[in-house]
Image 1 (cartoon, rainbow, N blue to C red):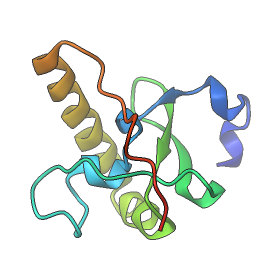
Image 2: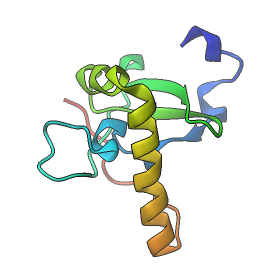
Image 3: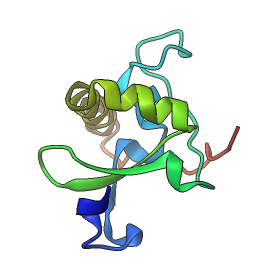
Length: 106
């Protein structure tokens, strides 16, 4: 994450709609369907990461460090899938998809 220190955290676009990026990517083994709207935890730097999704650097949140570790095992695919899931929802609803009620921590 050091290479992304050119901005403060509040200057990044939020990735995966602010939900747990692993859950939105469809790769979360705790979700029983292809994409779930998993909560994000915002009380630790270990549950936040900045990645470039091919368009721009975005800040991503995770329910826990385990979710972040799983997401990073196949980072490119999971970034693509998370972006695709959010784009699909926004395309159908014609509104931005943003987590406003699923912040919690384990």
